[in-house]
Image (cartoon, rainbow, N blue to C red; front, side, top):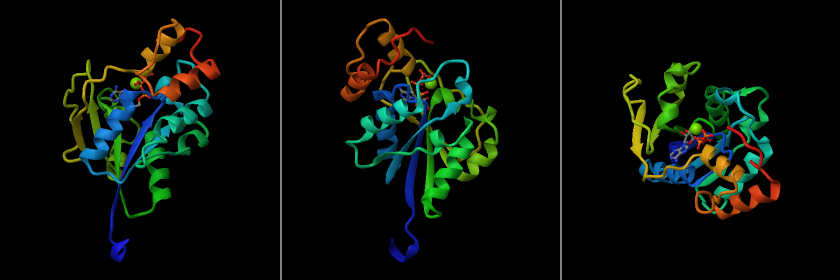
Length: 203
Ligand code: ATP
Ligand code: MG
């Protein structure tokens, strides 16, 4: 660290990652490049409050899949802060925990899909979150970005190469016996088979 003044740029990619897929990985890679981030930390959620209605896979399975999918990228890492914190996951807690772990000399960039970004104003403590992090909204096919009236200078929108992949579709494909090769990394196809994930029909 030069004169104690070097600021590290840290991306935070929160998600259920049930399973992690190439849409997540391309989005993280694009944002890393665009903002010249030193590191992107993937943070699998504990119990996501938005998804309380559906059965979410075991956090350890989602954590391990995230580790497997990100292992080959030297700028990607995975944090357990959300899965180790009891109770539902709130993004403000994620930001505070990561900020505390990495210390004062970091700029935080919270990476989120356009769908989730549109809900940001409805999140608990939105103003508080904008004080801690810059928000990066990724557009993907099928999601039209409306200006939700977000605070000036606190949000960037970035176009991700067309990747109409979602975890829901991957789960549905596995349940229907359809292939997910090339939608997710090879190691994830193998992990899902090994652990018999998504065999039962779920939403
Ligand atoms: P589900 O279908 O279960 O909602 P998902 O594919 O949206 O899952 P999440 O784990 O909910 O995956 O997403 C984590 C983050 O990644 C969210 O901010 C989401 O908007 C974003 N994201 C998901 N899929 C893509 C994609 N194909 N391209 C860019 N961003 C994505
Ligand atoms: Mg989603």
